[in-house]
Every structure is written in structure tokens, then in C-alpha cells.
Length: 77
Image (cartoon, rainbow, N blue to C red):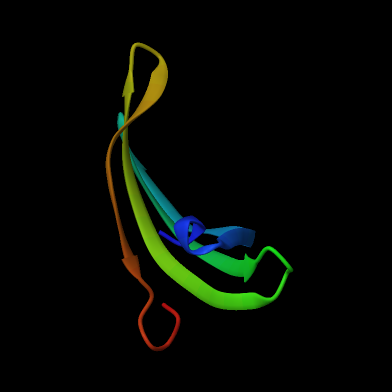
């Protein structure tokens, strides 16, 4: 884990790529970019991930039922 190595979360961004809703099921696709830095603010690492979450609408509210993530490919996708 980065924080155990003296590295902290400097910034992040979340980009919603798509959402597909069919009845009471929704699948949401994101790209997350994360910048890590030392406590002095020196950037040490950048990460980017693709995230997928599956949601179900039940009793009038949305509840997450599953998800997965993977690093982006060489093209950043």
C-alpha cells in the first residue's frame, strides 16, 4: 500500500464513461486517475484504472451488487 511507504494521495479524478440502465439493473463505467506524492509534495507515481459497478434498484433505492477494476491499457483506455 502506498501510504505505508510514506506516499500519500495527492489528487484524483473520476470520469464517467458510460451507463447502461435496463429495468432495475444499471451498469456504470468509470476511469479513475490517481496521483501519489511524498509528504513534501514530490510526485512519485500516477495510476489509472477502469472501474465497472453493477447496481440494482430495489424498494425504490439503488444498491451496488458488484464491481471490478483493472489498470488502463497502453492507450489509457
